[in-house]
Image (cartoon, rainbow, N blue to C red; front, side, top):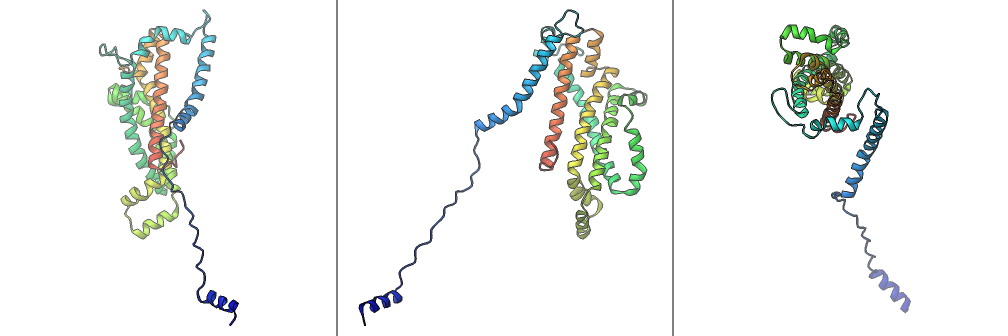
Amino acid sequence: MSIQAIEDTKVKAFPAPAKPAEVIAFAAKTRRRFDPVVIAGKLASALVPPAIVIALMLVVWQVACSSPTASLPPPSQVWNEAYDLIAHPFFDNGPQDIGLAWRVLISLQRVAIGFGLAAVVGVALGALVGQSVWAMRGLDPVFQILRTVPPLAWLPLSLAAFRDSSPSAIFVIFITSIWPVIINTAVGVRNIPEDYRNVSRILRLNQFEFFVKIMVPAAAPYIFTGLRIGIGLSWLAIVAAEMLTGGVGIGFFIWDAWNSSRLPDIIVALAYIGVTGFCLDRLVAAAGAIVTRGTTAK
């Protein structure tokens, strides 16, 4: 046997070890750490544009109202004459002499009661209207008529019924904010996929279990849209109602400042009202985003 044949036999009998497989390393996906640069960039993109717009509005306002014949005070005059209201919102010198922050909190207490009742009753009635065809035919026309009544038109009836300004204001808030909650909840219930209803039939859920486990979660985006509209209407209604019913709320403060010709105080109070309304809307939107896992509009 030749040497070459012997070598070939060795190769066949003892094959060379295979080349080890190449190991590919995958980078482990780690959670992103707190990056102050990214956070600062997001804050700047959210705060700088409105700050620029507000600054431009103040400049235009200052220029337009600096004339001695102007009927409205410029921002500089508002700052000088209403400085105490701006710098000390929590002062308390007596029952009728308190800071604007306390007045806003008093108004918010009434809004919390009236809007809370409207949310509970509105979701229940909206679910009934959305679930039952007969309830929709009977109640929907009534709701459509009542929701067009202006909020202050209810005030004389509420004063006659309750004979007190505080419950009357709460009723005005309730009757004003309940309609968008009812309508949006009903639309959300009617849009529940039929597959969800079939699952409830398979699991043999009763009406309460269907309401809690399927109806409310499925209609939650619509419900929170109605709640956002309702909270805005509630804040509008309480300010208007307090102007007529009196008390120590922010609405009565504006009316009292008008009777005393204190226009700078009115402007500061309007700023408080706007910021508070914005915060209420953001609060409800944040709650909706948490409950619905981001499916509601921000």
